[in-house]
Image (cartoon, rainbow, N blue to C red):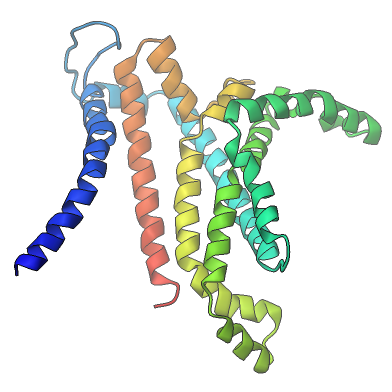
Length: 290
C-alpha cells in the first residue's frame, strides 16, 4: 500500500512542474482573456467596465468579422487538404527509401526550422520576381503580376507558402505511423495477391487513423489560428482577401486599442478550435485498429 502511494506521489511530483507552467501560461491566460471579453478595456487604462455580452453582440452584427471568419475557413480548408495530402505522399515516398532516408527526412524538415518572417520574405521575392517572368514566358495573364497583389489569388499564394513550411512535421508523424505497421501483414497481403492499393487501403490506412487524427487536429488548429504568413505577406489585403481572424484580432488589440473586443474574437476562435478538434478526435476513435 505504501509503495503504491509512493509510486503515485513520484508520478505526481514529476508532472507538477509541467502542470504549474501550463496553469500559469495557458489556463490563467485563457481565464483572464474570457474575463476581459466581457469588459470595455482598451488595453491601456487601469480601469474598465463590465458590458456583458455586448462585445459578442457587436461581433455578430459586424460584417467584417463574418467575412474574416469566411476567409479563415477557406484558409483552413486549403491548408488542411494540402498538408494532409502532401505529407502523406512524402511519408510514403520516404518510408520506401532503403538508403539516405535520414538525410531525406532532414532535408524535408529544414523549412520547419526557419522562421515564418524569413520564409515570407523569400517567397515574396519569388512571387514578385519569378512569377511575372513565368507569366510573360508562357503568356499566362494571371501570372503577369505577383499573386499576392491579386484579390483572387492572394489567399491561395499565402496558403501555398504555409503548406511548404508546415508539411515537415506531419510527414515525420506519418513516417512514424507507417513504421508501426507490422511487416508480417504486408507479407500476408502479398501472399494473398493483394494489390499495392488494397494493401494500403486494408492494412496501412487503418493503422494510420490515430496518426491522421493527430495531424488533422494540428493542421486545423494551424489553419484557424493562422496569422504570421498572411500578415507578413499581405497584411490582410488586397481588399481584405487574406484578412484572417488572427489579423483582425491583432488590429483590434494593438492598432484600434479595442483589447476587450479582440479577446471576444479570440474566445470565439478558441471555441471553434475546441469543437472541431473534439469532433475530429471522436471520429478518429471510431476508425483505426482496436
